Image (tube, rainbow, N blue to C red; front, side):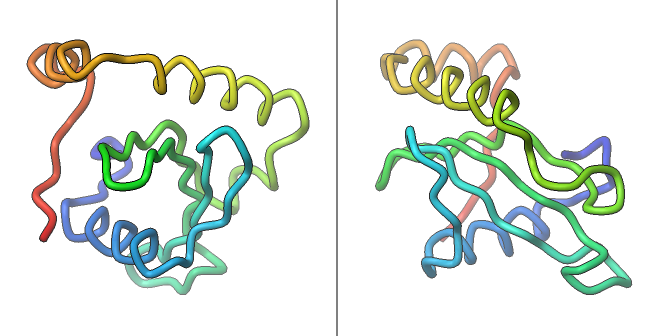
Length: 110
């Protein structure tokens, strides 16, 4: 997400949407939100796809500009659901190792 020029404040706004119930469930603990791009509204913003086990780590897995692609097709959703199921199997130690190896990033959120 950082390679899209998105900062921690952007991610915190997305997390607000998630925690306030504005995320769209897609099944298999996969969710979608829409978020505004700086200087544009949500219609010119991003689609964020993430895995989420309530009260646990949220893993952002895909982000793209709404001007770059429409909705995901069936096959793309299936791939993300498979990845979500794999994420669900990770142990706490494996998650910590992914963070340590910078495979996962951490955003401070209160």
